[in-house]
Amino acid sequence: MGEMGLKKAVLCSILFVLVMGSLVPGVGAAANSVYPSDNGPRQSSYAAPLAKPELKWAVPFTGEIKQVVIDSAGILYVLSEGVRVVKLTSLRASGEILWSKEIKGVEANTLNLSNDKFLIVSSSLDGRELTDSSRLNDRTAIVSKYTIAGELLWENTYEYVMRLGNITVGDDGYVALALSYFTQASGSKRYTENVKLIGMNASGETKFNNTMVSDTETVPVNFSAPLIVKDNVYLSISKGFMRPYSSRAMMAEFTDAQFLKISKQGVLLSSTKYKGINPYAPVYYNNNFYVSGEPYGGDNNLYIINTAGKITKTISVEAGHIGNQIPASISKDGHIVFAQHVYSPAGKLLWSFQPTVKGKVYRFYPYSVPGLILDSSQNIVFSGYDSLYGGAYISSINMKTKKINWSLPINTDARSPIIIGKDGTIYVWGNKVYAYGKKAS
Image 1: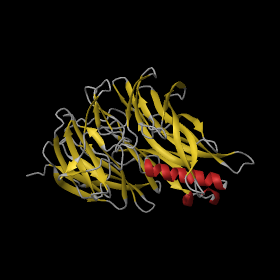
Image 2: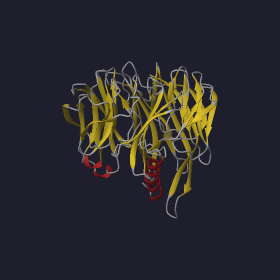
Image 3: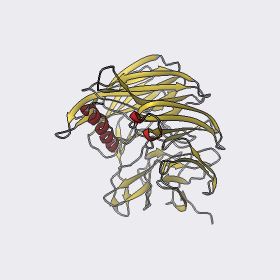
Image 4: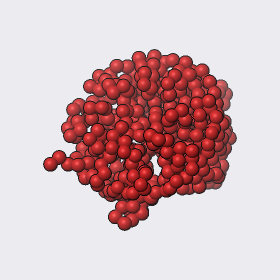
């Protein structure tokens, strides 16, 4: 790779991760489970406690916990990453470890629960595990399927990966994966980044492997996590421009985007143009897609797109508003929660909220996405981390009455999405899995 190309690839990736935090291994949107995910409206099937919860237990892990999912029996499955070691672990609702095993890879990425009985895992190897010494900057992506007992069923690998994105799993077990990879033209010193979308059936058979867009020296590209709705896969891709970041480096900024509809056979069916960048999977509910987009120099927008691919409404939030990079959550009656605002189903702003803990107003800035879900009683439950006050918190607000049910500074390393169990237990994680709820008497 030429000097400018290397600076561009490395710096753009680093800067983008610092700002958006979703397209590198281990940082991603919520996994597909029986609970809120990027495959739906981000609602929980269960209710969080109305009274302030307390810590029930905490289970430590070596290294960092990347993803946690929970099945209908309340069993937790944890994907963690130590020093060049990836582990898959199963926990009872009591915190007892059922089983734990090392899996292939040195970097953990995403974990999805499929049909309440399978685990879809993505991880990666880096250049130190590859025999070709010229590939030290490459990743080999690994997508594997396990039973919930930890038995490996199949494993697929993809080479020359630059950025490994998130996976989504459909109701039929169909898997879609977004990633980017390098190519180099003959006689050229420059490497091109290409965005690829891969679809595979429940047996791991590849149904399509399509390059969706490629960058140029002056036009960077980016991509969202995919979304599966019925017989189609949806993906956002963005293009932009390079601007000077310092005297020796360039920074990618994104302006134009497309929301793509692709069949499970890999055929492009439609494309909707919008502005900005959406690194997270689109949200779908009741025949509408909710796609966020923040163009360089502009407001953050939430685009409501119908199944025909038409933008029916655009909600704009002032640029820089804390929390506006979090995907929307949609209530059972269609109300929209986006960027600390609650909107009517028609997109009219109703009210806004701010977390308050022990009399202090916390900045709503989750480190992981999504840091906010709606429980079955229509409470807004969210987690975040505020460097000003030096800690993490969980809060619950009644969406109808606007009343703060409770706010809890948890004083842990937890900077994660939220999972709500059948009994109302709230799970968050960092280098431990924490369970908050009502302790057994």
